[in-house]
Amino acid sequence: MTGYLQLARLGLAALVFLGALLALPLSMAWGASSALPLEPAHPAGWAQSLEPRLNLYRMGPGLYRSALPKTADWPALQRLGVTTVVNFYQHSDGEWLRDPQVTQVHLPMHTDRVDDSDVIAALRSIREGESRGAVLIHCKHGQNRTGLIAAMYRVIYQGWSKEQALAEMAGAGFGGEDRMGDAERYIRGADVGALRIALESGACSTSPWALCALKAKLTSLVEGV
Image 1 (spheres, rainbow, N blue to C red):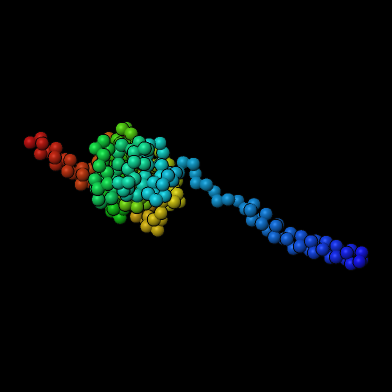
Image 2 (image 1 turned 180 degrees about the vertical axis):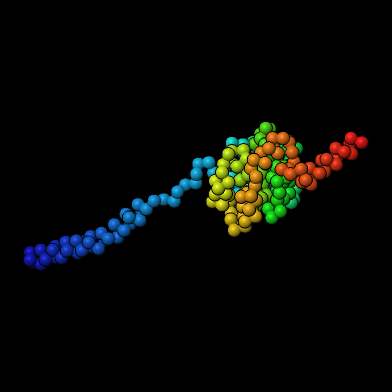
């Protein structure tokens, strides 16, 4: 009887040992996989996501970007201190925003035919809004039109390189990356120095022959008669 017990104990010990040997490669593989480097975080200066459903991001203190809000979104935006809303979509914000204390700036645009006068008007409106409080910029999806203006804001006012601004536009998670070709072409071809001069001088465009500049000259001539 004692001999059978000893054999049983030896057999059990052998099974435990064999199981440990079989489990060792799995544990080593798991340890190796868990030690893999994590995906790198976005650069600290990139826009930070606040509400994925609205594609709402904080670009910096007092400046936000999003898709087209709904009336139900206004309380949350109000808590962020938004006092100016700059809209690049074709439809007015009056359909969802009815707070008379908020400045609404409507600058509808298309990225496939945006020009310097569009960008100057948008950047000037953002800057003017920032002097009064927090600013929200948006279009329909918060991607291409908003992305173009956000990138140019980074370049013109924050001193980012075009490559840095384009990297954020395509990599921060805003969406629509496959449709950013027109926005990217404008950004790469933009004359940053000329845009800064126009913004500082109060000009509506970088060209004296732009339609807005010609209208201003015509108005001046008519008023001077």
